[in-house]
Length: 270
Length: 209
Image 1 (cartoon, rainbow over the protein chains, first blue to last red):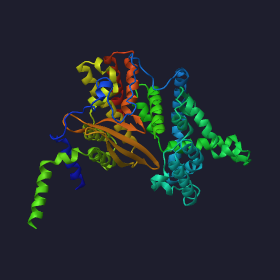
Image 2: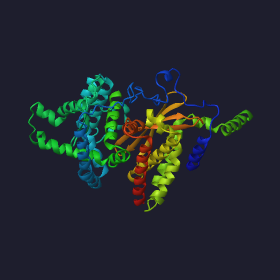
Image 3: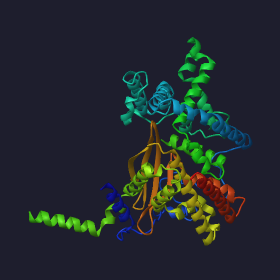
Image 4: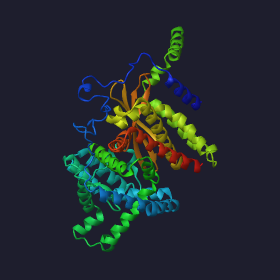
């Protein structure tokens, strides 16, 4: 029955409806400034962004003065992914059952609440800040120290993830230039500054900053181990995504650079 | 009683005469039906047997292909340089680009399909001819937003001209790459590059069954 419905839907979509306007035309007034043939018109793009300037020179989505270094680091990180991270994450995924991996992810997300909360506040997003706090309270109590995510089903408790790079972006601070860090991956000057600020707000680091001596918890080794576990755990949910984007690219380095910038811009706009 | 019956007969008649007007107004339904069919095919045990991957791939491609306007996608991805393409080059480019994208993404979902769910969040209309369908791929705990941008083509049918995955436009991503290649090379060379990638891809896919 449902198959029939699917079939009918598919067949009926093929029929044209003569009563509808026939051509996809940009709204009036738009053609004057942005000729459709030159810049593909996309009404959902507020920047309308052409990748050429008035002289027809190619504009880069982000400045890349250290592209030699970046390309080398891109290759380095690619090897780390295929030789170390991916095999480890596949083994980890095979050994650790999905609910446990989900709980580990939840705990990290919960612990990093201060980073998101502070950045909501810095961006004047009161509702989102309330949401972050509400989520933390719900998941820490009902969710047993963040192991579970009972806040999941309440959209107001799930605001978009904010970080300092985005906050600086909303203050109209540009990307600066593109940097590919070994191990940490793509970033920009602005987002690197942001990451350092956010790093100070992670609980282990914060204890150290305010001179709470929590012994092993605040040691550098712990930080490295925690970062490693988090990276492997996150990767275990996303095996294959990196490969897909890489295989789909003619120039993987440029594809990832562009994807990074587009993704960041869309988050800043949120 | 009689008016009620007349009304229902009339309703059926109207539905029979104008089936498309109801559907073509709804881009989400146009996306949803084929995607649901694809998921059925991905779950179908008959394709879990070795050596059936290419049959499955062809079947998925046949269902998915009509959703997209690859001429429009090509034109938008090549952008300003499109005017330097001859008509034959435009056709050749759209054809190879379509197959390349189809291969890449179908291979990806075939290899990594782990009972992801598709959540249809909503659709927004910019005008009568532009719409955006917002969906989410839900995989365990990861939610990947995927938006389909559609326009109503000359035949009054909704077709996808861009896909936005986590805020990253596929068209724009290729635009940057194509532009930097076309800065140094001719359209024919870009088509040749794509053809070469497609051949390698086909070879690899054939080896994997």
